[in-house]
Length: 291
Image 1: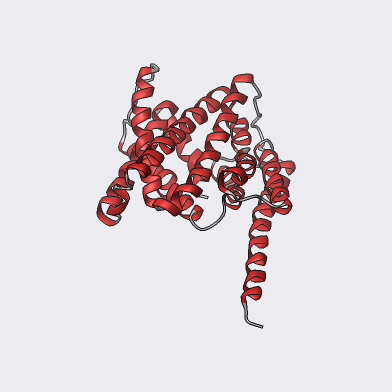
Image 2: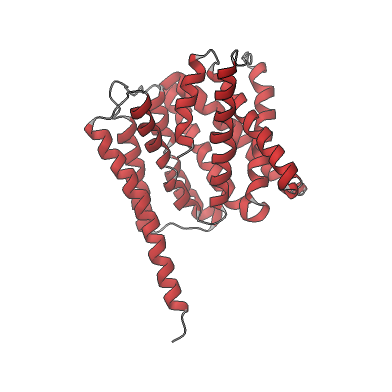
């Protein structure tokens, strides 16, 4: 739900003169700084995950996080918001396909069906916004699919790394490493970093980074230490639902009937996934009771 507020903050900052290329770096810098300070004061063990943990989190996690920022930015620039979000939320399908061979968490038929329902609902929701048309270009589709794949890698990495190194270390090192990589890559690619020019824009940027980078990602990785990757990926489809509701309330971008149907499909898919998990937990509890 916190991730769903990203569009509101991004729109406000771009309107105040901060280009999307700069936001791709500034948001994780704010979030990474908050995570670093939090670890230094409260979770010092997260600062030193061991050399193997550091290679995994800062190496694989940093590259995945940086690639996602770039792919998401380029998809927005070449295809627009509806197409980008629709392609981004192919991620649950990628996770369900990869979680079995990579994590040993093979999804059942019910989970696959609910994942497909949620993905279809996202597509209907983001393409059912009044006055906003999806743009399908080869470059935009390519960047959007890459954004979905790298977003799926967040989930797979978090599910593998969090039980081993903790959610604090996972989000901290992947975020800080992504900042370093983006700080090197953006100037080399000809993009200058534009800082906010007003106090109001700085406040928006700080809140943007704290809520949608530090807090949201920390909560997601913490959840991945407790539940399987497929279920977390399906739950993440609530992000565009939150985005559409906020856009309807704050930006006067309402949904067409097809969009509302898609929103209901997403909610049904997420709720169904958790209902299945609760039912399975009750059955396991009954099976463990002495006869």
